[in-house]
Length: 387
Image (cartoon, rainbow, N blue to C red; front, side, top):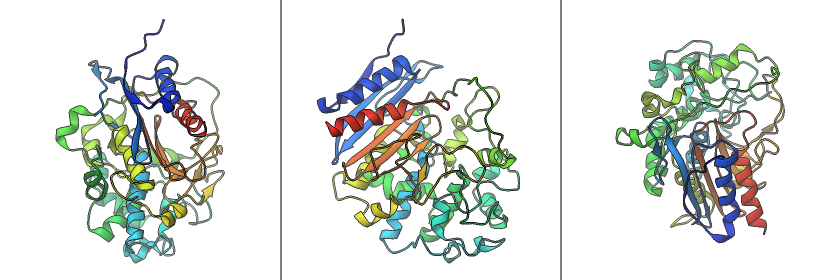
């Protein structure tokens, strides 16, 4: 008989099905530690957490436990970009070279900023290998991007940019604001909104972070072979394992990686931090919405979909400008006004202005290819909203 860990927190009665699924994820889906938070029209209606933040020591998950949220980071940077658009400081359809002149060599002169956000620039992997110190230093990757020839003619195809997205987008933001992406996130979002969300973890928070547990080994027939550059894209040319090394150690447990805040996948956040951020975007939290209707209109336009350049199977993902959109069957959200991002292992964060929803779910037991924990939660949330 499986013992269910105690679940802490609260959920409004009308959102009870979300709480039921959250509990059942521990009983039937192997959840180790997790939290889920939902805001509606700026008010917190679900705030649940439970399990172990660190199964090695038995440290429990608390309301303040953050976790590395991997590619949920991409949506956070996209929010920062749209705020610059609203200020008139960034034109998404201008050439990247308007803001970053050195980018334009080797066939990249006409690439618009938007293609950096939509995985169309042809730069998911770089030719040169890196050491981890080089990756954490920022400038070596920027210089390698400047020297890189795209893997395909930009704009003619798309393939997910798991790591380089952070430098591509982050360097544009840095050129405009003069601030590194982590500083920009803290100054623009984290501090003003009171978020426990960081892109560059403060040393004082190191011992609060959840310990990530690698996904269980999966058995089954081999999938389609991938080109060599796909592994380079995930590991930054061998600088770090991703998501885990041969011993099962998840690479982003490394304090140096967490402190550096790798800009495409290194944010650390609580579920409340992610949910509150997206709630602030779509309906406001203690103030007006961060994003205008025009920004949400633009963000929720499907820019790319379908089979990717590397030839892997199409799981249904639909990409907007920096955001994952409603993408059944792989990642169904609430509908066509939903925008956010998921993260390796099972994390999910999104907003939806039709329903006034901000949603955040973070875990430390990484899931495999058939992981459905977050999808079950969003299905329960949809049912609550339609009841």
